Amino acid sequence: MSATLIKDVKDKFVETFKADPLLVFSPGRINIIGEHTDYNDGFVFPAAVDKGIAAAIQKSDSGHSTAIALDLDSTINFELDKLKPSKEGSWENYVLGVVAELQNRNIVVGDFNIIIKGNIPGGSGMSSSAALENSVVFGLNELFKLGLSKHDMILISQKAEHNYVGVNCGIMDQYASMFGIKNNALHLDCRTVESKPYEINFKDHQLMLINTNVKHSLSDSAYNDRRSACESISELLDVKALRDATEADLETIIDKVTPANYQKALYVIQENNRTVKAAKAIEDGDLETLGALIYQSHNGLSTQYKVSCDELDFLVEQAKKNKHVLGARMMGGGFGGCTINLVAKSEAKAFAETASKAYKNKFDKACSVYFIQLSDGTHLVRQTY
Ligand code: GLA
Image 1 (cartoon, protein in one colour):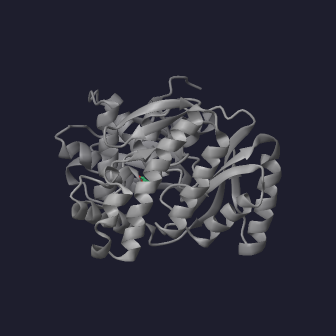
Image 2 (spheres, helix red, strand yellow; image 1 turned 180 degrees about the vertical axis):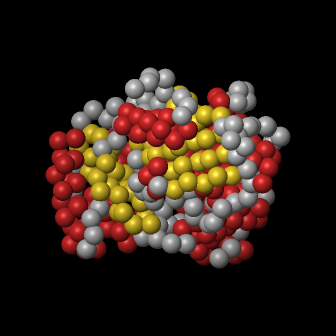
Image 3 (tube, helix red, strand yellow; image 1 turned 90 degrees about the vertical axis):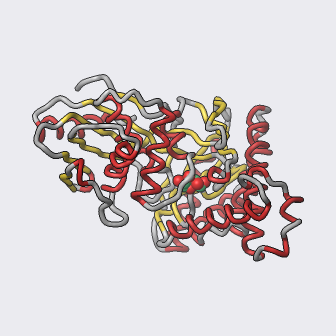
């Protein structure tokens, strides 16, 4: 958690609304392996990180509600009985969407003011959106004593994303952001929405992110298209979700699907299996195997599921050239954002430098390197400054 972020939203809140706010921190997430498996009822392996969204929130008696995004210097005023989605792609929909979902469930909240500020680079694939949604629902739950469980809250956040943002996301991001445990990754079963924590101590290796600093357009529609493709194939297979299918099952319908969709479904089935194998490798401290699974995951995402891009593929190729990197892959929805790398601690900086230089030469733009800490999920911040 960043103390500076908390201080910034608190100071601004006191200055703007002359009231003492509740303070919430909600983290972004990484994902070790298990990409695009969550909406197929499969397994994922995320962890909350030490970057996220700080929110200051308090009731309002002005007759309307106000939300301020401090880093964007953007303010909206809204009335709770007249909610509607704002323009596509705006930060406002994450806030308004959460309030609308509460109302859809007949949960009553009063007017409120909220100020948010974050340090997750937009489009990095570290899920600033889930962090924001969770900060809003968590803050409102505390403020209006709604009695929602964490499970209730993440479902509300997810629905906000479906209905107001227009991305039919799975549950991984909201879960990891809400339930994160310091120094642990969560092996999450997205069907039962229950996870097993794994303490992550890779001894002389560590996880490192490299951000391509690109986010190619159309990624939202490509995401939704892939989800629909998976759902139509499960229907053909007469299973609830691809999680229930095997490669042999898929063979039986090979003539009924396009080769492209066949590869996508095959990827999901294989990635789900890889995620289970990765949990075992972590348990056994077998980093070579974990790394190999991570490379295979990228290969599937790039060549079968087709959600990578030149910049991500290039960074993974750089990793493959370096024997101190055991595994690397794109992370999150795809079409830009970060790669996650499993790299020897003693060589991490050198690899980061070489990869950054090569990236600059190739694309004439800089990538960014993040060393992250695995952290606790969404929580109230009690200290005052
Ligand atoms: C995005 C979505 C998640 C998940 C990942 C891909 O981050 O929000 O639900 O599907 O993409 O694994």
